Image (cartoon, rainbow, N blue to C red; front, side, top):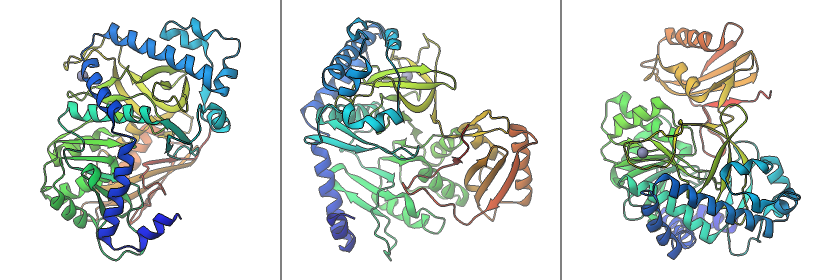
Length: 455
Ligand SMILES: [Zn+2]
């Protein structure tokens, strides 16, 4: 544990808020500057460009990135030896370049990087895939990424740092052993109340709600399951939230259709989804019509192999270039020429299938994706508080359920088994266990699916 963390944990709560705010201002220095504002203005224009102009811009940015990587990254110079990178003139030409997977990036990281840590923003990527990485970012790239995210939110009426937002994340803001029920800290630098994801239990949710009602956030963002846990609670109790967010922006976890509908009903506003990884992937964001659009100014997304997996090439990764990088996520692209009533011509993405680990296997080895797994619970939408499905063997799944005991009936177990039978066939052995609380990951995220089977 670092010195500052020790000081933080021994400080009284108001001082912890102050430290959170100071850290917030420090972070802002690498996020908001002239480049940020210039990029915000550029993106407002870019949204209105016709598709061919957007694609031409994308191609120019791609050429710049490729030339830079060959000139400054030892890894890419060797990887592309014998390939005439300058001959890449169309997006399809990218296929001449080899794919980079997570293991190759991890093993060669220092040779991939084009600069040292000095003057760079250091991003730690999530360890959900078992490979956590430290990725360097130029300050200018960090500012452009922040501008893109804030532009996406501004499009639907939320102006970052002018309005208040409640964030649910896995930061360790509550010291172990804290007696009081204050599970949040304030980052005044961003008008952001940070709510810890680690204490959201049935008993604690009333405290979270009191905090939220006092804060009156204009938007909610962060971990999807934290928000759905609170929405479930309000729904079951028939309570009103007592605050009126303009929008909800989930991050980091797969957004399920059921959870999304619940959030919209309970909080009375729309949920806007986004795809942006901490490694620095290109952005895919919802427009005001809740249609996902690729942001061609931020990079290239290509399909690869089966299962709709994507390769990413990102224009905000000059310090750690990601080119044809197999990030492990899947997306379904809408057919070419699909239009959206919002008027933006940027290509439409039908759905983000989430992390490739977000699926279960049938005993025959077929994948059942997160959306279908969530649908196993569709016959008992209000009775289940949280569920987790664990697969350790190809023919055996354990369903852990945290249920509302006042609503859950024994026949629900039978209904769940029936759903399993339909989706996974008779060879699947299903164990159902009821727990008072399903533990979260050490990252603070909640995982609906834990699949240890490797095929
Ligand atoms: Zn649209």
